[in-house]
Length: 378
Image 1 (cartoon, helix red, strand yellow):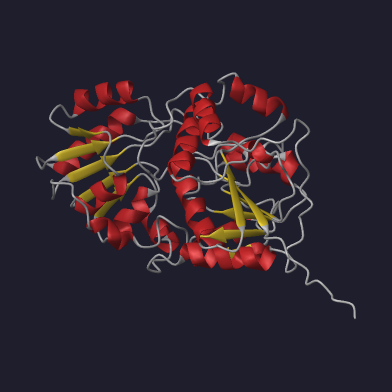
Image 2: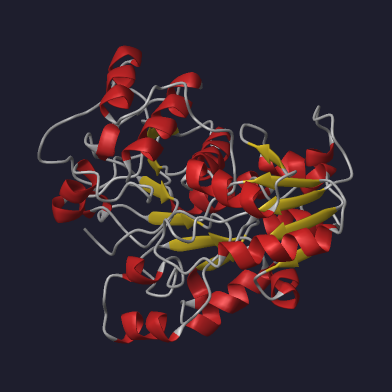
């Protein structure tokens, strides 16, 4: 009698390509909802000329910069997550990433799922030129997110964002309304230990650092008028030049309270009035019913408000991931990188973080940031 050995199915493997701390925490939340899958993580990366530019420090204000790489590695190490730097081991069944504006060349063999981070830049004449001339989409910030359809599925924050992306040219059949982690249960931010309440909060943006016009003095003067003598608190974007931003703020609002380490969403939860430039935290203020002023159209922002689904977005995105994973658990077709494996131990991660230009434990608290100013396919 012949005894047949039951085939053992190997777990599916997924690579999560992270970015800012906000993007990293979002993807981590998705991975925790996929216990049946072997999850590996990497800071954002590219190859070729873009990688050389990042190593040279030219792209420090993007998610390819050494500071963001160091903060991402610190987070991954703190949470004891498996790291496959630049996805070099390959053979992944699924790749989950935080933007489609730059897609590393070594992930093209596997299904690609993109998770929207937060705010998208508005359309301009320049963004239409970039699109029509087929220039690298990073040249107009995040405006062209999703437009070219270089992904299997794109998970978006709300029906409003889905409609917006379709109007901009994204393939409707590949867009899934799931909500997005970090913005899907804003009411939880009310439970915090910050002592101060009932102030006017100003949240600035990294416009200059991402090559956009910033009329900072006029913005601060407007905020001072809105405050009308009430306590004024200011939180700078983590990607800004904080020394310069502090000088500018105190020159216009000398009695303002400057926040550095506090979590932005909790500051929003405790304020009475929120004033923003171009920031995803505007959504937090709207979701919490705050009096909000913004450089953006508030009517349009209300139509884009991320789903408030009591924190189910990560599970929703994980369900989409399961649709893309092979049923048999066989290895994917994503090839290993030419320069060999890069699975790192805890000690190796510390070294990578140091070489990236920052201490592993120096990451800022999660702050919604629109930093995915990346390139096209590397």
